[in-house]
Length: 533
Image (cartoon, rainbow, N blue to C red; front, top):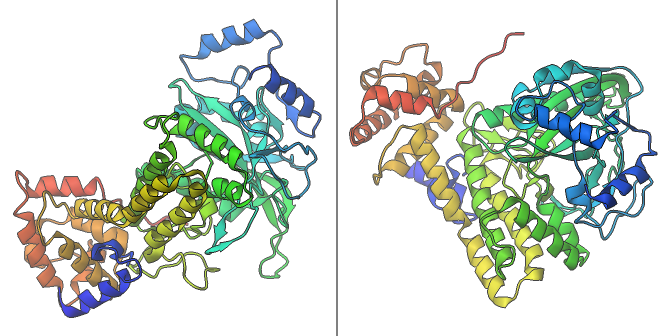
């Protein structure tokens, strides 16, 4: 690697002193039922269900081995949350400071005009929610996913949390336009939390109207499903509905009023770092213990909830998961855009899709969020931001740890750079089809990314086309026009040097062949397609 490349990577890694490769671009029990009945006087209706409990249970048993064609025997439950956590005693839905609780009860606001279903995810409905996709054609389904009605067992909840936004503590945030309408347990025993986004005002709406518009809703629907298909842990999107109600989003004073949208999102959990931060900030430590123990028991089966060091073990798991998640983001050129602590999942999944973007031309300074003037959340800084967010999580947890546990947790956080580097390195070696370990592997990846940056080559398609081109074509430096992204990189004067090093390294792959290499690389390097229209 020449001196110029070394200097570039030294600059990219200076702030955290990570290994140089790190920033190669990174430079219902009775009580619950009573509560349900007590709040059903709200504006939201209840979908009809059988009044005969035995009939209802028999109907479910009859359909449990096949996908449900209707919502008649399909239920959600809020019991698991209401039975464990204190709920905001104020039932009126107005913006306010909320204390000493995890959730507030708040009903979605039904649309005034006609609602249209515009998209559904067949995989989410059938694989996660046990619903035949034909259910989406029913009025009951449209009413459910638009917030017009709720199903039996559901008590709509909005979550209280805080967070650091762009590095600054912003106090209470919470679900300002989202409603958790319940938990569904599917045939595999998996629990999925269903949340409506854009479903109206809540106690946490601040100055917002609780609604969402088309562009952001479609982007979240498409990207969450795309990320799942790419093998990246993420929330899922089940449906998207549209109404003719007006949403006042006249960003450019053009007089253009937009229409309202609601997305039904699905995740194992919506708890995030900010869920704990708000409790720590206000000294609600008993409630913080209850929340942590619940999260551990529900979502971290390898941690003993009775173990004295359980919070340290929990933190270690979150540190490892966060390192893996951000490395995966980097491997597909994904920039989240708003990596605030209130947008970082404690389960290390991608949540809260906002002004995200996929990097096209390789550029460590790529920023999809136009409001990020300081470029804090540029793609090349995501690993650093992950460290910042984990440190804020540790500051909250420290209130529950003794001195030895604090020391151990600090050591765990200190291992984050190496954890990230190891995962990043493994992913990018796979993208190049490298097997085994060789000293020059790091330099080989860094060298290619440098050439891509210098030539502004397409990130996704350069790796994809390297997966498709033959070694003989590379050896002859004969890049067909069909491999346009790779052809762009080939214009760099150092490209022949990189090709020579790459082909030499491929020879060290044991029991490998060119066809095996290409097949292996194609499986980890997605293709970017242009959409007509």
